[in-house]
Image 1 (tube, rainbow, N blue to C red):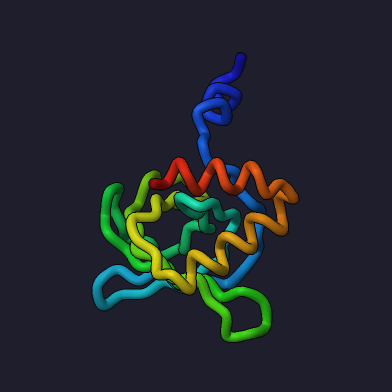
Image 2 (image 1 turned 90 degrees about the vertical axis):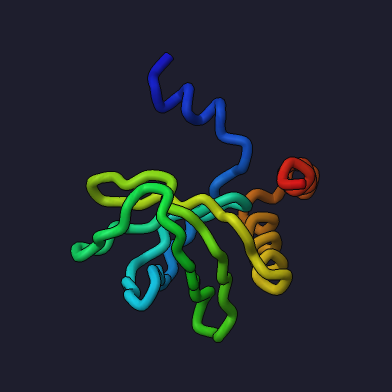
Length: 123
């Protein structure tokens, strides 16, 4: 079994591929980038060329959904930094954002029971 296979087995929250503009805010600095994928517990984004953040650093994510003003906002921490991507772990999310995120995951997985199990795992 490959290392990536083991990683997938440990993953408890299904990721949804979703290409969307997003902003990463760290204190008074912000980075415009693109979301790669999203789950109920985190996000993966393209690493901005000028990124200077560190693992475990607290950040705010602002993800724009479609052409509307609908957004998902979450307080997160940097989980890992790769050559071309940054992984984030969601720490807190407001009710409106989790509602949008839940609907997005539900529409993309097509499995309401799986979504409910993942939501229960968050508790």
